[in-house]
Length: 488
Image 1: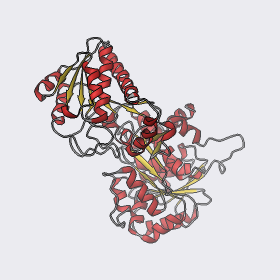
Image 2: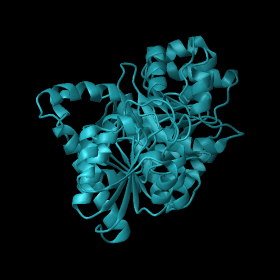
Image 3: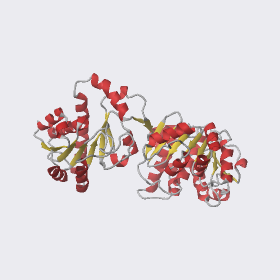
Image 4: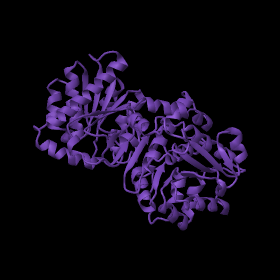
């Protein structure tokens, strides 16, 4: 597990480190790390570094200073460096002097800079750093477009310029980095917008003891594997966890089949299905105990409710029954729509242990009653955190970067490695997995975080590099679980 800190947290942590460090030493340490990543990229892409051409896009302030010092390090290794000063009167003086000492080329005009970029083997983005807000300002967009047009790889220094480092949002024109090198700590952009960051390399500059509690955390395979319930020699189907699935209808029986099957494959001790798709569930999953009504389901230790349920009075009655059982509840799809429309149901959800799993549209319905509802498109972590706090439930906000927020403010982020889960039925699979984990006794935050991780891993394994239906994601769950257990 690793942490993610906001720019403000990182800047506060830098202050005491800077106070006890020789002037400029922290910047040179960071720049040296950036240069090492640049050298690795050059070597991987071109087979060598001597004589290769690198253009550094240099903004004002410390981020530009990082770029200039990194350029000086590259010169020392035989790389031909050109620095493009976007704000010549505000370029970092010591960094510029260091670069000039190697007789590197320094440009201040756009036209020759565009030509240099077109001939480069690598561009370093040192335009703006973690204090930046808003999109790129002239002349930066022209230079970034030149790199895009020429197909030149870009290494972003700290964060891709123009992408909000706090939220990963792209308000206007921004850098799309091939890779990013960051210093001291990962920032939210690195997990919320991997498309713009590419692979991220973290350089340790000694901030660790000063950082404090992270803004969010990211589970890794070993963390998920260590939390995943597996039966021991004294376990039986009841100690392993019995999950009830209240999902599906005559119109949407597939939701019931996907959710029930996912729960069974997620190593649940037992799955009980209750609903009008009982015949379809029995036919697909004979190990599932199926009945027509939730009142007849029998003993369970958690419920997963909502996929394909319907939003009529019968659906509301089913949700109310499940919430009143006093057991952990996973609420998805139609259950979320019902919660958003009914204050009494929201109060019942807050009174028990509830995990809700909305996509963007469902999230909007869930928070429609709020004064000034939060918008995930503006701040995913902030929106999920506020919804969890005000509703008194754990919120798993689905998307390319899935955010799981607990009512007490704890947050997990899972940055997906692909978009294969953008397919009908994949949410039903997630519901079954998360419901099984709740039944096994996991905290809702861990249940959501582990389910999101394995769900995404199953999509990668099931896809084999091509889009696949949700049933293939479901079928890949055992392999995905095996992979995280092997990582422990």
